[in-house]
Amino acid sequence: MTGAVAPEPSAPFGQWVGGQVTDHAHCLLQGNPGPMTLDGTNTWVLMTPGGTEAIVIDPGEDEAAHQQRVVDHVTALGARVAQIVVTHGHRDHDEGVPRLVELTGAPVRAVGRGHDDLADGDVLTAAGLEIRVVATPGHTSDSVSFALAADHALLTGDTVLGRGTTMVAHPDGELEAYLDSLERIKALTGGGEVATILPGHGPTVPDAAAMVDFYRVHRRERLEQVRAAMDAGALDADAVVATVYADVDHSVWPAAKLSVLAQMRYLEQAG
Image (cartoon, rainbow, N blue to C red):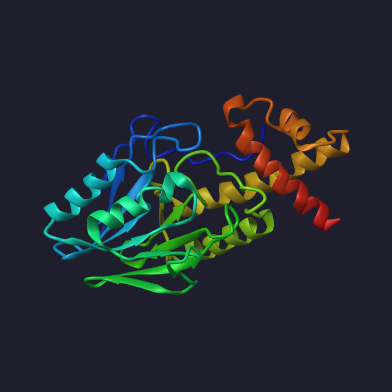
């Protein structure tokens, strides 16, 4: 059990339903709850009030009803989907991309996916709305976040969740990169650019700085626990998981193993 204490979630499990959460961001919650997706995947529709163009972030899993719901929501506002954007290449975020492209004809922006690649500092625009790309690798190598300056918000995908913590998806994800990304987000919160986190799963985080501080402390504590387990004789990742995550539901142990493998590699590289 770690000593880090997470901020209270803005909505208890099962009570997060999405909706209009800032002036420019509306969440359409996909009905795919689970141990890894929490309440479900948050598909974000970003647009200016009264605007004619929308940016959709993370269409979610391939589900005809969900992608049609995205189109219907945008159409009802008198707008069209101008861009489809992906925070990272996990199926619960990007599997629905082809269907949404078929429905809208909108171009796709992602990192290293054969689309119009995103790079740190790129600015996406839609009818006057500007969204800046912030590279935040670590959960995966292609993870990016999006700074919505108009709302002092950051859309984080799986880098920071609405409750609990995320995994570092070894071997693609790397702990050193993830820790650097947390420091980068911390700098954004400290500078006042980001006050709220709009995550890929779970409810919004109204105190971004507090949540990132929790993540930073928690990740360092877990690293020390992994080190201690290895020093005590845990010879492989399964043994470390059984020791460090003994009080965690076994359904998340496979994901915990990926993070442990990333932490073991980090410790090996550090000597």
